[in-house]
Image (cartoon, rainbow, N blue to C red; front, side, top):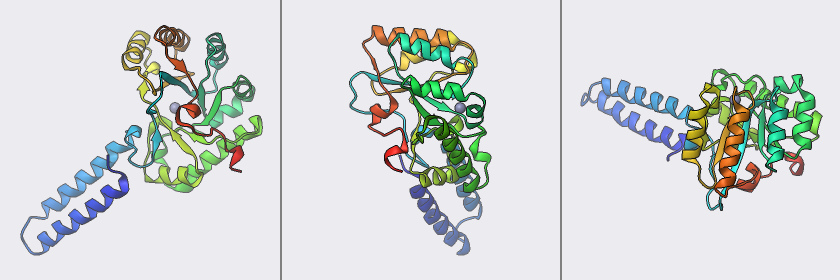
Length: 259
Ligand SMILES: [Zn+2]
């Protein structure tokens, strides 16, 4: 899959060739408009495809792993996070929680508990707005930086993992993330657990499960405890081993070593 920079230069080349054609009267200027619309549409679609690695490299699925799977929980900390961790403890499982800055302010004790129980904490922005609506790299950087500092004040470690809200990326978001040398963590199995259709979510996870994949779940899902228990049972029955996202990609989850 080509990246944004390559596609941009290909587009510029094609556009200039078409422009020359228009100037010399060989083709209609409609071709310029069509090329521009195709380019903008293509870039827009890629914004929603974190697994395409189009704007920035996102770790979504590990290769060469033996029956290892990673669980991730987004949009916490929340009222069910403690129960989720109790269930993970019952299966001796570790997960990565991508948490939201404004909720860190609301539930600092839960943040402390996530770390205490040996789970990884990643940054999931401060407000959880679609960052595509941010018009400057500065405002996106502020969200990431502020959330990292909030987390650091509580667990004394600064996250090195970032997951963009809704998995949406664009050139501004990519630039902001790169400036912090953070690793983007995506997913390879989207459970759609927030849709309140637990049987469909479980069937989808079971159908798509294979070595090296990351499952996306949410602390805020209505049936998260039912779904989690069934997923954990399924993984156990099928011989999968749960490991952390950091272990899956051999990445360091905190910046402590880099500071
Ligand atoms: Zn989210």
